[in-house]
Image 1: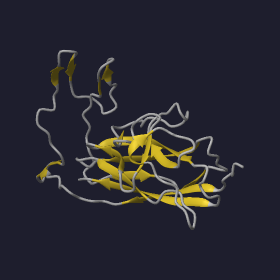
Image 2 (image 1 turned 90 degrees about the vertical axis):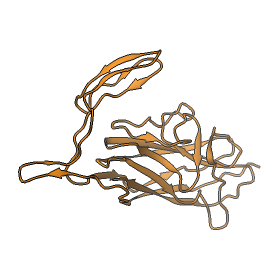
Image 3 (image 1 turned 180 degrees about the vertical axis):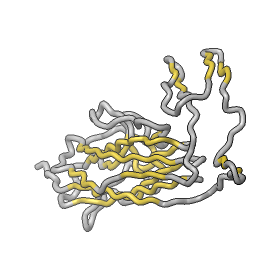
Length: 236
């Protein structure tokens, strides 16, 4: 007889950790202050055997240039004269309901991040896989895998998926999903992994996290849950 599982929930929390790794040098006098300067910001020709583009300075929200083989966002942004960070993740409960070894359960939520930190930011995830008092569902680990009903799995990704049809690629800014969390229809979970990042200062990026759960025929029935915590680390 097939056992039906129940009460599988994840509670999402967020924290901010500021880790100043590199200081910006400013130039000032009684009459002016330059918080951050740059050399050769005026643009110029960028080319390979497959494309050629003439870039110039413009607003950070300038339209990207792209073709079938490349994409480039042309921008030159100013920064505030004080360190600025933003990380918006609301506490939320993802309820997977009653699970079956025959189907994959899934849910999603979103958060956003931005900073004027010169070296950008990283976002890491912490927390156990779904567990009861006596049993823990096996997490997928650090290598992305496809959902496999009938096999214990717990994983997440931060991109648009078609199986399941849920999720969204990062929107806005230059934030990106981390390695192994950026593959459509594949999921991973390894505590402490970087799940999102920006390589430089960035306007707001909206991220969507899709979580999946699969159980096996012999997974013990019971109430399962966990708490995931996101750590936001700007690097100045």
